[in-house]
Image 1 (cartoon, one colour):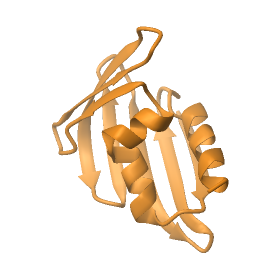
Image 2 (cartoon, one colour):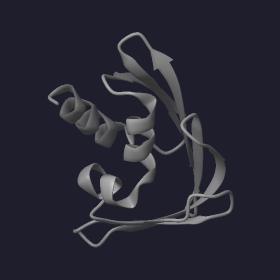
Image 3 (cartoon, one colour):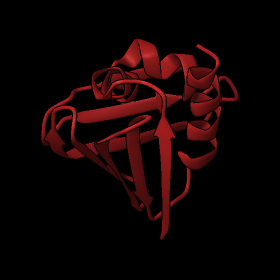
Length: 112
């Protein structure tokens, strides 16, 4: 299990959108994203190298919490909290696919 906290210099609404809007996810995580943002909804992430991963959304609390369960194995949990400097994003994952992508997104948001 990997737990990571990042403070992003953006309001919680914007961070939530970056995590849940397929077009925004395509900007920083995968090349093609399909996401049914409801409990039990399907998520598919495709990359240009041909990799494809599938997940099921297991929890959604808008602008606060999102949990995916990967079909292969593992889970990723996002929790958003207000912070004096923006939004504190806590990511807990049993398979660390998001960690490097979140570092890239944090860098991009810091430049805005």
